[in-house]
Image 1 (spheres, one colour):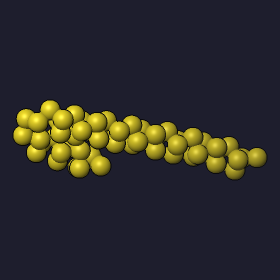
Image 2 (cartoon, rainbow, N blue to C red):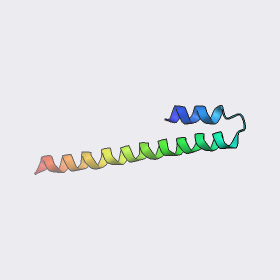
Image 3 (cartoon, helix red, strand yellow):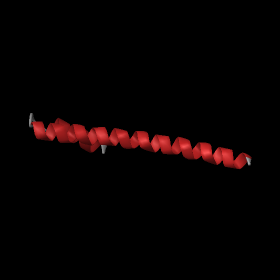
Image 4 (spheres, rainbow, N blue to C red):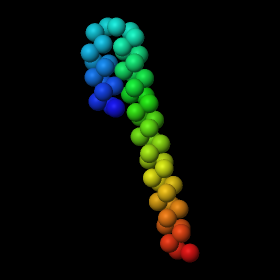
Amino acid sequence: MVIYGGFMWLTAAGNDDNVAKGRHTLLWAALGAILIGIAWTVSSYILSVAEKV
């Protein structure tokens, strides 16, 4: 999604709508990556606590 969003932004050729779409795609891709990182951290913590019990 990052590559797609960057491609949309770079090939917008000054079209404000396409620039906004590319920026929007990049924003949601970044938020998705952050969400995946948080989910990974929480699940790793829960599994490590469960192994000690």
